[in-house]
Length: 71
Image 1: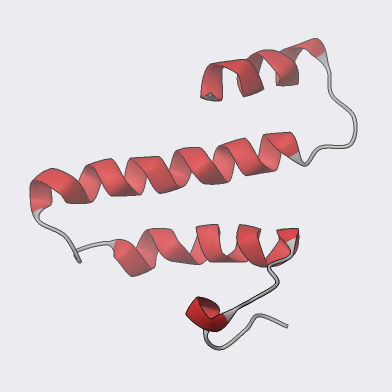
Image 2: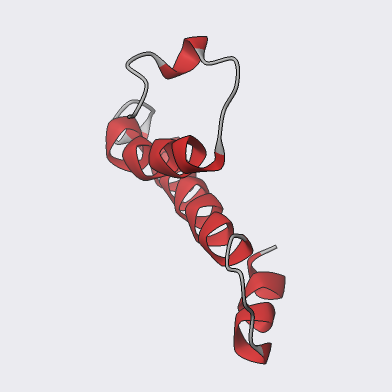
């Protein structure tokens, strides 16, 4: 179950972190001035992409290259 108040979470687990990243992109849209809004959304997307790649149990050469490029 996704917590109702993520700011009060004391012990985050990986699945909650992933859920927060996925929900943050549309939630943050329009909260900041236009010059910062796109940068913040790109940063959130990159963090979600990195998290998805990093949690894989089995990596290939291609996924390791993608992970290196995402850092």
